[in-house]
Length: 88
Image 1 (cartoon, helix red, strand yellow):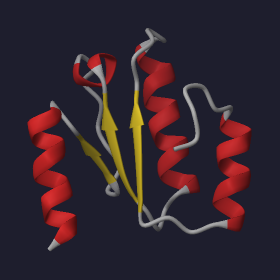
Image 2 (cartoon, one colour):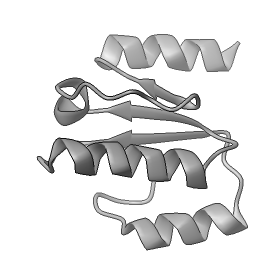
Image 3 (cartoon, helix red, strand yellow):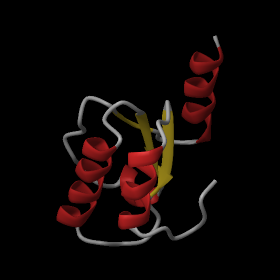
Image 4 (cartoon, one colour):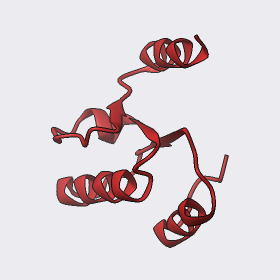
């Protein structure tokens, strides 16, 4: 857990020194559609060896073409399903 608000530059610095299998982020503020898509694409590029889970009200309300390593989590039940897949 890195905290509520972590600057993208700090995330990218971490990505250069650490490899993560999974990354979970919740988008709960209301930036514009283009900003959400840009954020998701930047995460995908910088954590390209990770599976990225995106959740939150804003993520669910936005129609975005997701990169290959990004999965949209629609609710806590969907999150539970994904975590159970990982645990196997």
